[in-house]
Image (cartoon, rainbow, N blue to C red):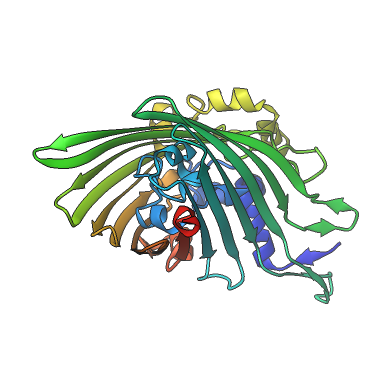
Length: 393
């Protein structure tokens, strides 16, 4: 049987935390080192949960209710119909987990085209390269290498339902090739389909003599089939997600504007009970629920009741200052409760817009000394956007 380097196992564990706790379940010492309240929610294809672009991530991973931009495909495609320009596209690059390994990268391409004032189509492609994995046999002899990857391709249609309200639906194909093979048994390539349903509200206001916008948004994303890596023996949940948000944009004067946004984010995936379901076979039954049943149960199935349900909500927020519609500075904070992983970090970013080109960058600062937070520290994202309508003039 082939074995593989530690980073390969870590990659699999991140995609399926249940497998890690399953190993701890038979170890009496595990319950003394891991608090009983620690109960993260497992889902597969974690790439779908990684925000791929710089503006939203510089504001703490908040974007469902911010002002519309070229990268709305990920946060809320219903925002596209409110874009002033008729068409645009962006390319983003994220070197991922650089504090651990040097060759994991996330690439993203997004674009939209307004058919008219009420109808818009958009698309997105995300490609996640997990670097090189080297395989060894039981004698620690190298037996080859593999380059696992995941990608998602989606298309969306957005419609203006009124002067202030719009909706969108997105369809997505997902492919996950982790590339782990154990002789004739092991992991196969996973394929799945999913959809997003999103809404966006944007109302112009007057604050004194100055202009302002009040915004709200919701996006139910990755609602779709399960995915399997073992030819149907286990069918794992996609990271179905509900993101709610509010935003406010205020024009201080002709040159200066400031905005703020906050998102509330909850996985629509069942909550496991690792401690009370000690045997591995019982834990596998966790995956037997249908997708629709699991989504509804995700609001009321936490072992510790309402308190734990509230712990499953991430709060992300940020502020943005813009000068002369050309220079932007952004700051944000992302909070994931300790019992659900404890992912916490501050973020900052800059943006420059000149004629038809927009360049944005974001940077993550770790908070606390948790391993997961330290792994994300110093993460940089770069996004290059183009106003295609200006190019075609």
